[in-house]
Image (cartoon, rainbow, N blue to C red; front, side, top):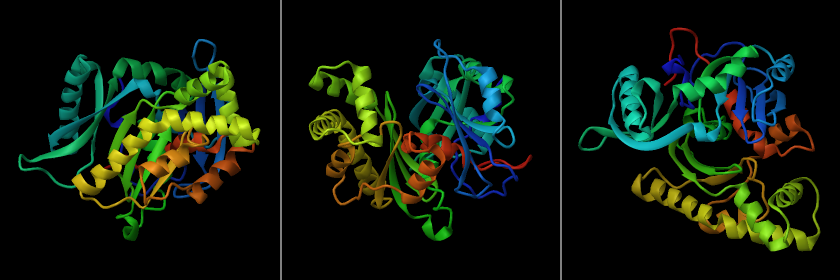
Length: 359
């Protein structure tokens, strides 16, 4: 049975960590992405590795064991496949940690229509206070114990020891908040848009805490379908063409088609990002975001910056040079650095000593 404390979503980093940082493990669309920083508190990536899934989508335990020889320790922070976790907004009373977790579990059981015994849930508090009814706004992250345990099984067989299971968007958000741990930066607000193959997540952070998160159906596969239709090629060829734009120059005519396809498909994502900014600025009154960062497998797609810039006027859509440089240094010239942001953020997860609990 998976322990409730394994599913923990805090991105705070206020604890005294162990000497060896965890290995960040992301279940991406094509395989496992693993990353580990050099030491607790460091932003330098010591090691990365990719373990492709088998034809049936399974994890090759033998190959994973070989890859792990290049990493230190075996503690791991894990983001399971995006479809394994359900995120729902809720309003719950502010209770003690264990009581709140139990309330979230029962709330999630009703939402997922599962038996409560097969649900693991973690509440992510996104409001500073409570309303007139004494309730706080939260995101409940939940999943089936059976499903999550089946994902963890090959990792356990390979020797990994999970210290936490988190949604991919939490790892992505943490990657861009590592410099917001100082007290003088706790008020800084950023938007992180994590664009994966089948979906995107819009995450708003204040300091090193998540204050808003929303899923979008827009992903790289929609860009590819749009590009394929425009060029008369299949989606797999369109995907290769789009990805190549990150690594080498395309013919101007082809690049223009890629940009047009991405802009057309990404329109709804831009609208949702604009709504997120308005919610944080006007409804929640937290302040206006200073910048927007893109990451994820499709986060570097041509035309995406222009689409989001038009959707959030006055907020620069820019790269975090430190994060991008760290990812590029670790992943090499043939990789897509932004695709590794989640694994990187997972590796930055704080590890607490026994008897201490993450907030």
